[in-house]
Image (cartoon, rainbow, N blue to C red; front, top):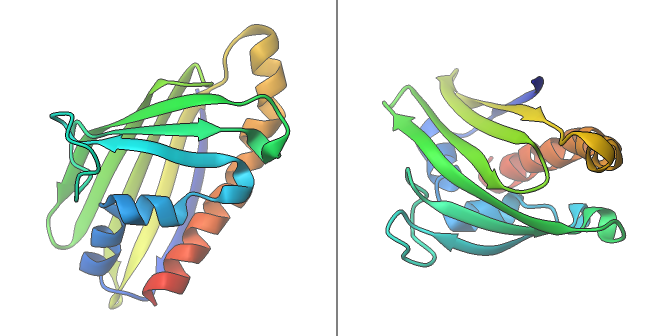
Length: 159
């Protein structure tokens, strides 16, 4: 399995950065339109639409059309783990349906020097065969600009 990581320092308290990343509005603000991703629906663990907070069991349905021209598809992720102790926090979402053979995205937050260290780690496998070969440049090349965008927007909105 391959791994992609990116981190940034956000000059805002952990509680603020955590709250922003833990709700649907934050997710929508961080989803880059230019990557062809659109949040279609968010469900809480009991199926309730648009929950205020993304907790374990919440599911996110995305529609994607990479770069607006490549064949698109649907993507569903589920929050499988979540924790906050005042000094650090994390949540993990796992793709349950979508273009990758495997996708596990761990979001980590740590209080640091009055701000927050934000780290995204994605463990992924491309699908085998022709589909994987077609997705490979989009997936790998798309990670860096997508996460750079997410971290830049987080800084712009919270600092």
